[in-house]
Length: 535
Image (cartoon, rainbow, N blue to C red; front, side, top):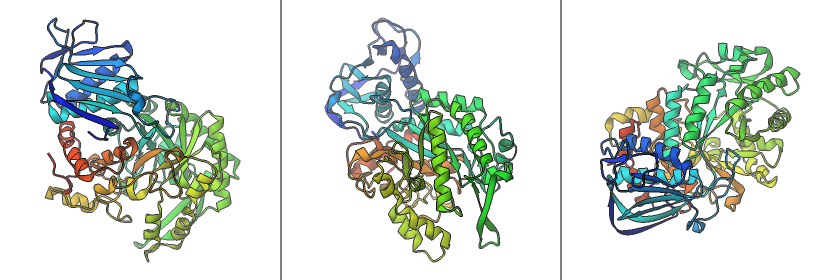
């Protein structure tokens, strides 16, 4: 199982799921799934659909009316019995709602019982059962699992700008998140290379801002209907979509659509003879704030489940510190006035915004030191990195919670360190991943702790949660994307959910190997690292 449960006590024997157990969501007394409360019908249906995709060769269930002779294989109930042994969850939820995600799962020779205090808790328990079925087939070892999350915010930041990913790919990523109990997908929707959502009051954003992506890759955008469908799809799997508008920097797409709104700042020459341009929004320009309000008014209703709007705020190169801080403060005030809470990259800590605003910590000291020591790094970036050393202390001093996305452990756009067991993947391994970062192994992804490895942090209570990030500068296709996500994503989930730390590597590696049949059945591409003895 990944992530590791809080408590798993083995029992004696196994319970065998009959391959022809019929399924019904009605009220017969003896069914393959007994649903103790009507509220659990949707999670039971979702479980059955997911199980068929995870393990299609098993054909465990077939839809239809129950037989009078059919045994009750799985029983679902709403209850918090025995769950108090799970430590209290830390952090905040992206939907702004306090939800009990703890669950119990008991396998006995007589059947399987999954319970939780909420629908979401039962869903998490059924997710564990999905993994047990995928690994063990019809004969599930008897055991009693009591489990719950360490952090309330467990997510992935997904760059859909530098490479545009259509809704089908986003749904696949949501499925990956749900399988490993991640409950947030943060969509990075705007950047220099593109603009990915409609603003009715600003049609030029789509006309010009959505045309392309990085390295002449095709562009695109999400219609309001597509975003509504993605939000529904995510909600069914208890994943919250959190949108990001990245400003005042990273506004090259805005510049192409509305050149009068942006200020072009001094750039730098590139070795190939080109020139890197910097654009920003000027906080002193009234028209800028009309634009920001138009954008916020268009985006906020399209993500109704999220309590947060991410305002970016990173890498505003060329702006003065004063102008950057002024923009961040006013943008944060505007978002709060519209009823959303604020999250921003760690540079927003320099603006001394509200204590309730979340600070997303990404530039960790290890990478700052390594990058700053390189002789090819331009002066403007060295200055930026020097300032970054003070961001986390500033955020903690004002009492802001950190959302941990440390580059060393949680940036999935790093190259893979170990070779692949499949020689055909070596070309992809050499091509995909930013060479600015040192390559990372799969073991690196779990060999750390969010408190111990975050400077200035001494307790879980200082953290909002954990969020990995995948940036797509080197991603040319869905296969490239999944090659970076798997098998790293389960490691981020391990650190975000599991109370057990450190995780024993041999045990984790064995559990990770057991996930690959599910990935194969789902058609997900994954990096076959030589660190793992894959099934």
